[in-house]
Length: 285
Ligand SMILES: Nc1ncnc2c1ncn2[C@@H]1O[C@H](COP(=O)(O)OP(=O)(O)OP(=O)(O)O)[C@@H](O)[C@H]1O
Ligand SMILES: [Mg+2]
Image (tube, rainbow, N blue to C red; front, side, top):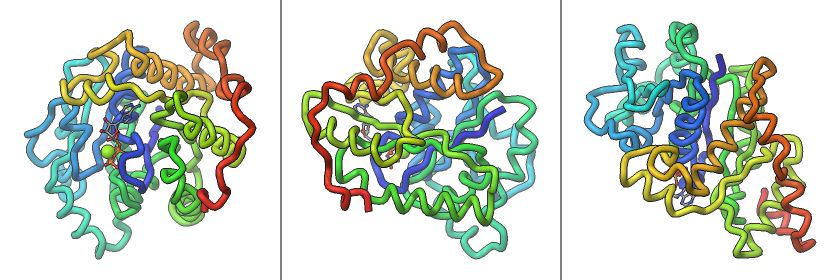
């Protein structure tokens, strides 16, 4: 069982797009996946058409009912959701003053670990109590970054926060990977940012990157994961590739698809024909 938090305190980096579509792609690989929406914006919940599902995650933080009572089955095989609601803002405010509130989610999901192969957290765009709960409960953190130079601001701050969480709250926490999102090779800027990411975060950057693809935005409007909305789109292809890479990190996982994927072009190979340009280092500070 793996618990992965999708975190970036910056807004609009692709957290929700990754949480929903990675969860759906892993579920298609016959793994049982629970997506936990920790964002009061409830974007993942809305995307999967769980808009009016009552208190959802609030119950997990504020009362002792079994957590499984708040988990809902989606129409997609192997995929469950624990939905959020805008009322979650209240939880955040209440928890701020409570001793040890960063530990609540970790304690509550203990009872779920037998049931799911993957638990994935979609986090809000800040490093408040809900994100800290996710970083404390998770074993791994996946960081989507937009391949735009402005999007890289704050990445160093995030990595420092992760180090603090490792030191104080969750020594087992590992970086699952930095995931470049919205890569658009029609412009040199995207290529330059990818090159910079590769140079600065060579240990953490994933081989897979997610290309800009309008079908991903459309899929959220149609309330379906990309793997169902447009299974042949680039977006679907990229999230299947990401799922294969994430699954292949598991030492126990052997799969024909994974072997095939690993033979495909890696990020570094794809970058070979890039201009030898760099983005100002200051962008990463
Ligand atoms: N690969 C992509 N191609 C096209 N559009 C994308 C892609 N990834 C994300 N988007 C769009 O970018 C916007 C932000 O994406 P998303 O909601 O996933 O980011 P987020 O990090 O969850 O945002 P927030 O910080 O507000 O929670 C959305 O409108 C989404 O449809
Ligand atoms: Mg989001």
